[in-house]
Image 1: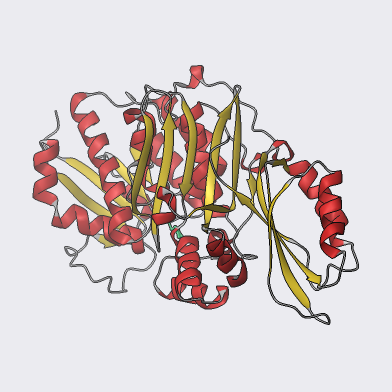
Image 2 (image 1 turned 135 degrees about the horizontal axis):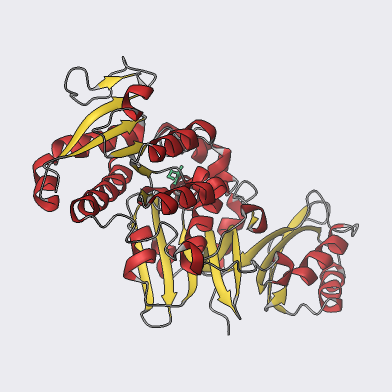
Length: 438
Ligand code: HSE
């Protein structure tokens, strides 16, 4: 048993600062929970001068990365610099020195996770990445431990706070997309490159990590269909409201006959469903397990302290493992490496769901029947139609809700519809409906 667990932190940005603050301010409480103190021994960042609003002991913050990685007393290295190459090198170098690692780096884990997980498993080291999905929500521990008894038939999450904040602003304040995005950035929620948030890439990374853990399979992110919210308009959000639905950017994984359907896209959900109540920067993940039934985890998906909370929870788990010589007890991939079996990710064309379609059409006799005819020819049945406004010279929105149809048929039909002379000004907007299959 050690009398103290020493921590090295690399990266003192937003999450790094939150992590340091928690380790310093909750030091006594954490020491009681672990049984010995966790000592934040070194912090490394290229910027050693900016005031981060926390009082750090003199000499704690330096730019000396080799000094941290080569310090034999450091047991756990926390990597919070983000990005791919340098972050991966830091993690592998730390493990090569026998150190456990903790990271919030979902992009790295989604794309290069196998290298990191394999290195850790082979060395019997722990890798903590609770902060990589859902900020402060303990979803990784839920998947690896709390729900480990279950076959998980469905995982549906609001996984990106920035996108959810934007959609919430667009709904509640009738804001345009660009204004809402600027506010999310000013509030510090967006990634350094906000395209990751709005194009669904950040949600994709988080979904890929969850699928990996839930189903014991490596995931190639290229196999997961990903569409962002950049084409969602205030008009579609308003029509969704009229239909009793809201638009959310969802990461969806479902188990079907031994295959996994995995996709990220804006979706219409019933306004009374639990995920529809998740607003602003909050994230939530709704899971269905064959034994447990429905579980929903809800919390802050971004921000210094919520994400720092998840980082420190990993540090505490690893510190406890070190104390009991139980490192590697929970495999980082949830399933031991030799128990993982690649599972087919179903291509998007094989999806069947309901669809919201909005065409801008010239309001002339026969237009609706032409469009309905194309849909009918492709076996797509219409559930309802909404059209308001009357401008013979101008395009008006025509909103069609379909019954369940195949993605392949809908995409083929839309190509034909978009070529029609009465469909003008823009291609048809398509938003998939996410509801229980019936
Ligand atoms: N940019 C991310 C979000 C931060 O908006 O959810 C947490 O991953």
